Length: 258
Image 1 (cartoon, one colour):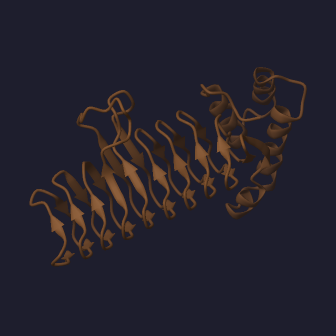
Image 2 (image 1 turned 180 degrees about the horizontal axis):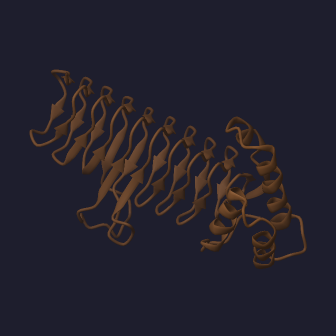
């Protein structure tokens, strides 16, 4: 049964699935669709062409699907898509895409967005990610599955954050962070691999050794990136993790943080 507080304002054309709850003074716009079991707290604004999946929890004062902050945006019909099982805490902002980008901002499943984190236009967030308090993503950023972004981190437009990478708090990220790496600093530099994250995800000891070898080839050898990639492809062609690093670097346009 859908439960809507008497003070909430829901546009008649908005679509709410079964079991959705909407708290006091929240506002749901005309082109919003919310999947079954999602809980919208008090004083939340959800607007724009926004689709939110099932079993999400959205806390008070979040702003979801609002007009983006790109100065070139002229009100085009762009979108925000949010998956299932996400936790969106107080004052989180997620904005629609732009026609000069992907025309949509996308968020996957089971992510945790802590207080004041910001997802700008045309970003793509994978699954099982954590954005700590005040983590801010500029436009066109891609964050792959399982990445953790620390508090007060700022990430430059068009950067990519690889799967299971972790970025220390207060870092300034201006280049891509490869999968499984630990980055920190101002600007952020790769300081090692995300050993604790790999342990928590129960990555095998063999895979961890292979990731360490890739890290050493990229960051502690006399090879340039192209040479290191060729070596890794030759030595670890059957390693899922090393090949993920190789593919990530081959697709990098901003270069990787060193």
